[in-house]
Length: 402
Length: 176
Image (tube, rainbow over all chains, first blue to last red; front, side, top):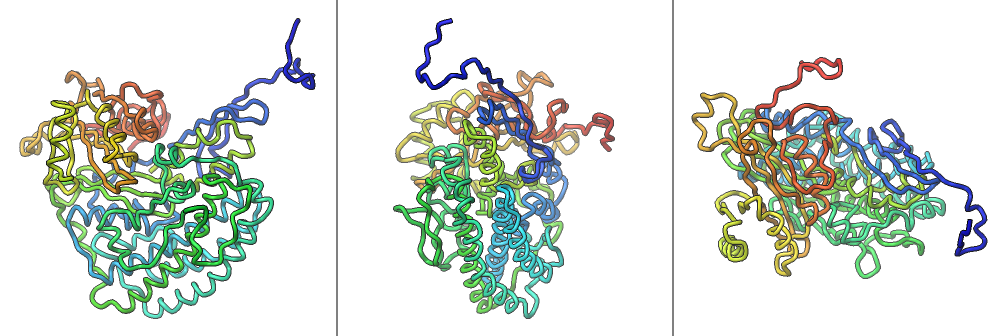
């Protein structure tokens, strides 16, 4: 048999390799819940990844067609269960848009304060779980130590630690308890120096950088094409954050707040804090950059919470009374997206005008769109890189499956 | 650009493929005929002064009232809508497109209505269209891989249709 070899060093041409289908999940610890990935592999190289989702599907949208707008709030908690406050806010704002409800100033600052605190908690879990994906256990414990304190604070506010249902249509269910602000300030003062430790533990860790830098590169064009949002989009260098670029009803919450969108512009990230330098092996749009954007957003949120505390303390008037549980919805439809920790969370509400129960509710999930790019990112990578890539998207299955 | 001028411009390019518009709504929308959908979307994405490069969401809304007494009071005929929420990252604008379909293709119950797929315009439409197919029962023609995404493959029916009936049993699991 005459076989022409480009490289005479290849002597193993008689060793045939077979394609193999490997199931990752749905109970695999690195899939962040119940995600099943079917990998088509040839040796260590993955040629195709097919995500299978829906294991947590409970058709929250159908449930929403049988409940009033305020009754559906607890169901939004259970979508992105790591950022319940942000989900509550998204739905509350969409319904307020439909009802054309204006909120008192104090209520808006209260909301900023609460959702940015939740963003910190959510990104901390994202950071810890990502370390776990890549084989390091300790950052996870540190992240949970800090998150625990945020949960304690939330427990004081609304009694719940995970599914808050605190922010609701018309405002919030209660005002902040007395003395809460001081505890919160103490927590922030304690958290800020700790973040630098986390940077040392993960962001600049040589092994971590080797596992993430240059892996799973997502170009900005592809990120937009696939509808990626949040840190995934900004990690690719697209300057877009709904807190600045969103609808007026949402951005007015952040009016007058000083914050810079965390994105690499002209080769560098914002320099408002002492952030670690970008390693030479990192390429814009890779797993490392997505992680880095998240870490920087924790710092940004700390600043925002501090500003919100000032404004909240100065504001007079009401913290926003919720609407009646059976308040009638006007006829019409409204769609609104907010910047949740994992990306743009959109809620669409259609009302026939006949009562308090909406005709149709729809949740546009950020993780759902972020995950849809996996098959493209994982094409041609190694098996060990699949958890690194999926982990860097920071998905929450509750939100994807709804 | 005002809404009126924008729709006039679309009508000039696409003629009767633009079937209507609503400017009074909270999020004003443009109605597009199914036959012209892909062309219109490509135009909206590529035109240098529009650049709707981001597809936020595709939703299916079913308009049907099973209760005949209540149905008599409605000011609409039964139909299904597919709603496209678009936005433009460079221009910071947003737009809503609506495609109005019969509830069943050729009014034959059981035959899903059809709309052309826009996966060729925005890749994110792939999963969104699968979801709308799965839950609202709209068939997207030209979709590369139209199968259920959230419900199991052997699920019967489309849960977000208003005449959907919850199964009594699924693989030995009681439904109600």
